[in-house]
Image (cartoon, rainbow, N blue to C red; front, side, top):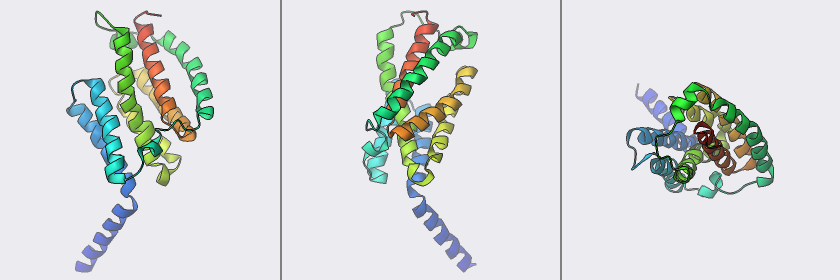
Length: 213
């Protein structure tokens, strides 16, 4: 009995040591998503920036003891990812224009009175910094060493789940965009392409829904 307990304890310690980085990344990413949902700080965009941006950077420094720049914060291979952005947006924006008239999209994104586009753009700019870094930075590059390209698939799962409650067509589309953006960032060694694509898609969709364009 004692030998079995000792063996299992050694196995557990070995598991924790061998998978330390991956446990830290996945557990803290999950914790930050829970805290963002239950304990919002100030408002949604500041909360996202802190929980999904600042806290992961602190986790990298304190628990992983690595350079946050290695988690996609550099520009990376922009010659590779820039064409991807242009092609994606050339396809996505017309699709957004035609889907913006759908009742589910209108019902979710139709704004209140006195909508301020400039304020919205600034808020989304801050919001998406945290949001994209959590998935296409912290998780993607934090899991890359052990899972290689599999990290693209892993980061897609919570990205899709956090879209629950949004229009069905948008939530389904995040399976595709989660994989594509993850792949582009993985190959381009940077989270910035996903940030650029996501913010352009978000603002374009809002403008189409409100009839501003």
